[in-house]
Image (cartoon, rainbow, N blue to C red; front, side, top):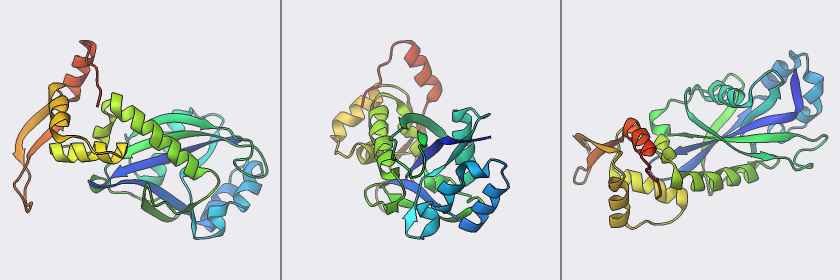
Length: 248
């Protein structure tokens, strides 16, 4: 049974090496409505989907989300939505806030639980679901017209990410497996929206002792090749038990 008053929306962040982007989509109206009508609970959500802004015009976009089935764990359902819409599995997914404004959608009250995911789009092949009409990355500061309160949800996700990334090494989910210190610093600067002192940043991050030199360097770059590092999760977990305080 679909819960018409509870939904899940996923903010999928991607870092392309220079910018922080968010993945938005438009469903194929005909296929989506056909799929919904096959659900025995269609009448529960019919009025909302038949007037959904992103289904009425190609200029309005939305977050990847859906009404939750009553038998589903919300964390598992958020992962299911993300995987079903992008083909990506085992991505970092974090529940960050519930949005319960009584007027956030028309016709009836819908409370949505917000999650955000972190990926590096250069190293993931996004596979659109059959229900997708369009799917596109947008710069976090140049968002298109969005339905309902989805811009508010994105901004709240970004605020939470900015806080989270300073105290937990979640930012590594936005990087390739092997990266330079410059790429690492750029990622933090893009998320935090501020420049960081190079010397202080490198001193602080290397002092934490969970970066491993791979013994490799960049290839095919028009400048002096930089050393490549990787995040040592095992060592980080050990350091945590010994009292490591992560702080960027």
